[in-house]
Image (spheres, one colour):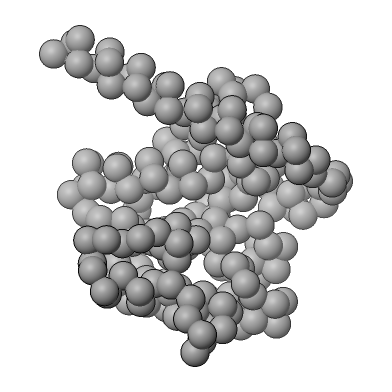
Length: 207
């Protein structure tokens, strides 16, 4: 991975995702910066629109949520409910909690079998547009072919350079080298941190 080029792709996609009430869909290989796009959109929603970004994501399920005290446990998987049930619960809860802000459903397929993916895509197609009325819109992030094929969305984005959903669906599948994946994830993470610190430093000098 060329970190500089990948970071530019992230910023380009971030700049192009509209906050106009529409539905955008984002794909990208593991470690390509999809979660970074979500975090940048949260800053944009708050800074430019004075609204919050609501998300259903793995981060929501694994974070400590210390500010919520004991209530933080409602976001985590429990023995009572399966992972698939909890995924559906988080997605449905997020869709009911936008309150004029921006919604991000990050990897909607987490823990879901194909039949359940079809079920949640069907639920989104039946309910998402209504939930988005009067809001900034929604970004759905996915690795799933079933989501790409079945979801009703307006805008397509790929951090791997695939111009159309068809091109992404028909791409050649090359097995990931897990060692390389780990190395590149760490390298890209450190690059992003360095860029963030550099921008903060330049911003501080400009004051």
